[in-house]
Image (cartoon, rainbow, N blue to C red; front, side, top):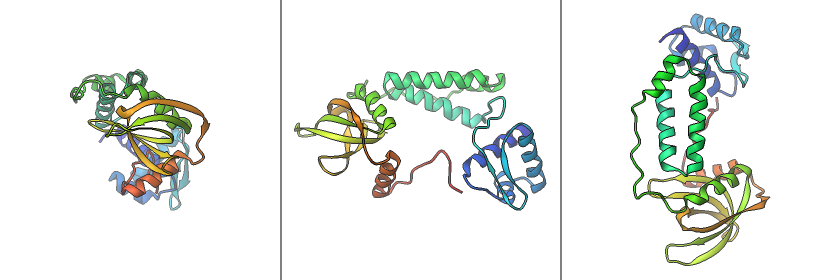
Length: 236
C-alpha cells in the first residue's frame, strides 16, 4: 500500500468513528506501527485536516475535510460505477439523471489515473426484467415526501382489487428485483405498512409534515423486522 493510499485509508477510518478512537486501535486497523500512524496524522493535519486529540487521548476528525485531489481506491471506484449503473437501469429517469450528474462531478475532480480506472470499469448490470415497472412515475414524489418528511394521500389497490384511500407518513423505499416497495406509517391502520408502487393508483403530496422523524420511524421498523441498518458513519 502506497503512503497516499494509507493516508486515504486513515482518513476513512477516522470518518467511521464519531467519537475519539485510540491511536493503538487505528494502528491495528491499518496494520501499521504507532510511529507510522503518528506521522500520518501529522501529514493529514499539515494538509488541513482538523484532527483533534493526541497520543494517549484518542483522535477524532472534524467534518468537512477532503484530501486534494479527491481520492478513491480501485474497489471504491468499482462500487461507485456499479451503483450508478444499477440506479440508471433500475430506477426512474429522474433518479438516473441524478446518478449520472453525481458521477460526472466525481469524475471531474479525480486525478487522470483514477479517472481512467473509473472509465474502464467492467462491472455490468443486466437489463431489468419485465421492462419498465409500473408505478415508477410515483417514485419522485415519494422520494420528495421522504426527504421533506411530508404526508402523502394515496389511492391504493390491493391484490384482490379493492381500493382504499390512505394518508401515509412515507419514510423508506425498497428497490426489490420485481417491485418497488414503499414503507410508511398508515394513519388508517395506525401501524407501519408496506405498499407496492405498482398498486398506487394516485399519489398526492400534502403540505403537512408528519410529526415523527423519519429516522426514528425507520429504526423502529428495522427493529420490528430484525434488520440491522447500515450507516454512513459507524458509532465508535
